[in-house]
Length: 113
Image 1 (spheres, helix red, strand yellow):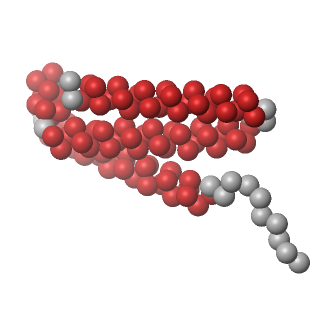
Image 2 (image 1 turned 30 degrees about the vertical axis):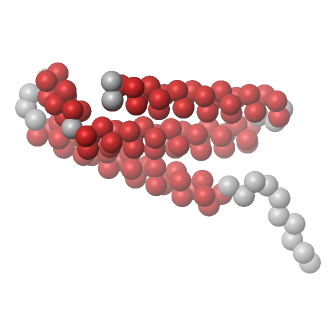
């Protein structure tokens, strides 16, 4: 008996992407908390000095990209599962991609302005 496999086959890749991006976000938040907890008091000057460093800007951009990818995988899967009309699903997916790309672009503008 030959088994017919259908579908987009995103399973393992999406599962792995969700885990890797979640790990990146947890490491970033942990590093940010440790830096902020070691800085007393946390003032605007402390924030400015922290984000003036290149490594923090790159880490923040990596966090934003991971967050966007994590969100895209989750939202795309929800839309594929629950929105049946193709035109509506495609429109919502495009809107989601445009918004996430805009957010990452806005993050770049904030970090390197």
